[in-house]
Image (cartoon, rainbow, N blue to C red; front, side):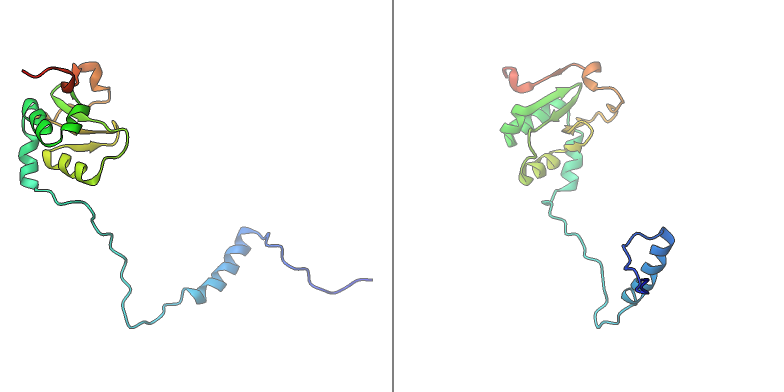
Length: 149
């Protein structure tokens, strides 16, 4: 005996059939709704701590010894992690430092280098970037390992 009942759709349709059925069902849902308040996108708030940009610009031109002295006096724990590569000062952390430390580093003239995963200070020398690792070209040392005079 043959029945005339319609088979239920399994959801496996051709791409064009899916698109045509989706367009008709979503057209009503996408119809513009009138509201009393205009819809504006949510603005992302800036949670960074304030930085004096003029002082930062001046700090970026300081020579290496002065940058190291600033690090030693203002962030002694960070000074212990500092490395001098050529004339630049690099600071690497095992984990992301606190927002206050990042703010102080930025204020001192450091910037984050995502390729090298280090905070870097150019010490007035802005032409260090290259494809090779600067350790291969420049001498490097950790100033905290050396005794100060």
